[in-house]
Image (cartoon, rainbow, N blue to C red):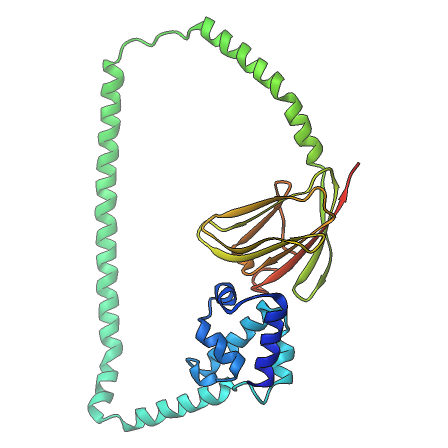
Length: 298
């Protein structure tokens, strides 16, 4: 095991993340993750992929990829050398091609241009045909509507007594719902502000709120690994959410919540029904840690 692999593995174990969970967080196959920890880069599809996998691994366990690349430069494969070797190989292959192959490449642009022109003409013909059919169908629908109106019975006047009863019921319902609206307005004054950012950890402050209800959910067609802990560092949930699945927690009696989102682009966090906006763009870090400090309003 290399020094880089040992450091990555130690960071993973310190976070309490298994290889299976890390595979779910990063979408990297487990055998490649083991190869990174053991320093066996021959398992990778290529040196470029090795560097990309190491970067994702480091972000998922809370380490800086840039610092690792600089510190362990001698251990990490250099993608440039591989690209240069492939380019030289392509040049040699082109030189070894027979004359007949070169002639084929001369005619290839003409063949492609001919195919593109034929495809464009087919697209135009198909578009015109659909437009004509749509126009004919629209005219037919207008004629059918005119016939239906002509053959329909006379329009009956509205039932005034029924309208009056409906209005009275609507007024009573609005009156009954007024306390709930007032409660919603009072809870809508809460404030969620970002207090600071340290690496992949962002600290938020929840104030002007009488309750602390937390909800974490996966995107409708996404998948993410989630860990939620309370102010006493007790784990409330740890696992994978996918396809709109969610978990809710009542933390009103707690002063803090700590959330680990393995894949922020597919993770939505709600505080008292209000969606939390990430201070760090999900495109910048695959995994982010969110700390929410709660100051309960008396």
